[in-house]
Structures are given as C-alpha cells and as structure tokens.
Image 1 (cartoon, one colour):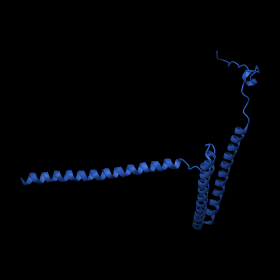
Image 2 (cartoon, rainbow, N blue to C red):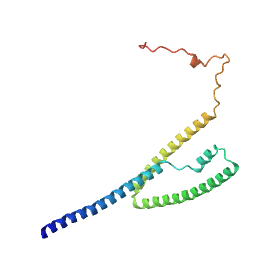
Image 3 (cartoon, helix red, strand yellow):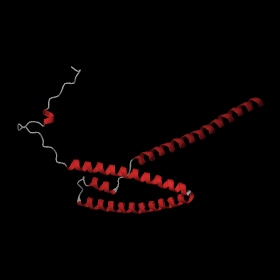
Image 4 (cartoon, rainbow, N blue to C red):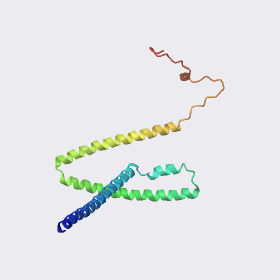
Length: 173
C-alpha cells in the first residue's frame, strides 16, 4: 500500500505542477497579447495626425455654424493655438538643450560633419515645403479658375478636340 500511495502522490504532484505552469503560461500569453493590442492601437493613433487649429477653422467654415457655435469654436481654437504655442516653445528649449549636450560629447570634426548633415536635412525640408506650397497654390488657382461654359443645345459646334476625327491605329482592324 505504501508504494501505490507514493505513485499516487507523484501523479497528484505532477498534475498540480501542470495546473500551476499552465496558469503562469496563460497569464504571460494574455499580458503579451494585451501589450501587442495596445501597441497596435498606439500605432494607429499615431498614423492619423491631429488636426491643427488652422485646418479645423477651414473645415468649420464649411459647416454653416450658428453664431453661438462660431463664437464657441473660435474660443476653443484660440485656446488650443495658445496651448500649442506654449508646447512649441518648451519643445524648442528641449531641442536646444539636446543639441548643447550632444555638442559636448562630439569632437570638432564630428561637430563639423553633423553641421553639414543638418544643412543637407534643412535643404531637403525646404524643398519639400516649397513643393507642398506650390501644390497648394496650383490647387487654389485651379479652384479659382472659372469653369468652362456648359454645352448647350444652341447649335454651336463642340470644341475642336472633340470634333477631330480619330485616326485608325496601324495594324488593328
């Protein structure tokens, strides 16, 4: 009887160890997948940039707001813009401190190379900014251009491009 009791106890201990191990592994798996889900949510939120007050003002202008709504939205936009200015100043100070700290650990040659890299980056950003401004200007100009007159049934001939006969493509029947 003593031997069978020992075997039973070993099986019971293995069973309990399996339950404990399974519990720990399940808890770890849940934490891991929860962290992944939160990470994905943060990435999705980061992918959609916030709307700046200027853009929001333009969008609100298209909503036929009441006078009270316009007044309240202007107040909100003004406060938000002011908060953003304060954060921008703080960010600029933090960037300046970062640059000073980095400069302390670099050699003169490294500082010079970093300066050249910064200049190249600034030039690239300026090109991108100019491209965006040109695109926006072209879009504004296109929107401001008068629309061509609509075709009417008054007997006028269509524009020359529409009236030109099509040429057959050689080799196709």
